[in-house]
Length: 343
Picture 1 (spheres, rainbow, N blue to C red):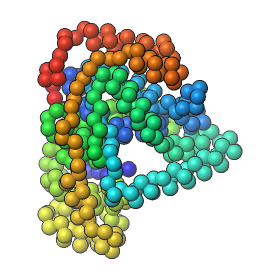
Picture 2 (tube, rainbow, N blue to C red; picture 1 turned 30 degrees about the vertical axis):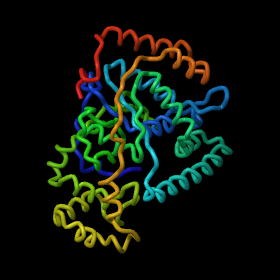
Picture 3 (cartoon, rainbow, N blue to C red; picture 1 turned 120 degrees about the vertical axis):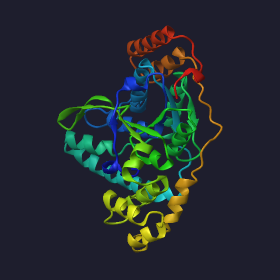
Picture 4 (cartoon, rainbow, N blue to C red; picture 1 turned 45 degrees about the vertical axis):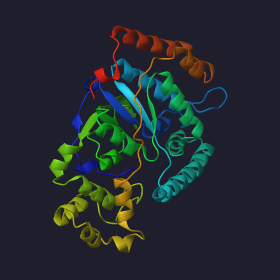
């Protein structure tokens, strides 16, 4: 779910070509959920191989990653680790939603209501340990780095970008902003002509600059965290009742760094039964892996073919064409080390 800051933020429209020769680090769980939710059959069920294994995540990951690589982007993938204890309530909420969605899907299936089946099936999306392992395997076979975060992936993404080892982070959520990421790119993995309901729209990448937005809002990084807690985070879904982004911003600007007063005015204690400081200091001190490595290797064509075609029934022609086009593009370039790429 993340934090909902959309209506307060300024986003600059960009193109994929703007990131050529730049290193981008991806919040991988975020895009994998995107793939397994949207890449589905007509009745809403995920794509599967002949053995009944879900392949939606691999389809999206392979097709989108190779396309971006051909455009000259250097991609690194961060995976979530152990979720904080404070997130357990949100995880339980999501499990309950999926169970209800499954019941609704089964009712729709009995009625052969294809549209309803498709709607409810997307809400049952679940990322399993096997799917995560397969995704890591495919990414490594493409010669790209995998970084395992100790906890929240968004914090790790922000840490890498803040260290100057990546130009920007990629996610559809805004959580990385709470960790001070300098630049956040949205819509990168879904850009292009996309169907929403009965109509098609052209989805373009957008970039959020943290410094530009903090200046526009007239607040600093710590105040942004407070604002997000008021609105709602994964650790307090829904935030304080009756307080939206604009009201939260007004409170933060009025009482500045008197955070206790802000939450007193917001009537935090009347709405929630735990201390707001628990969330604030969790975000401020989220554990990250500091000895990560961004090592880009060669494409392992045989491994990709074995995994996608032989194990999961992907089209041999499609996979070969994608890999050969990518390797041809790579061969045109002079050999570059990590230090030669723009960060």
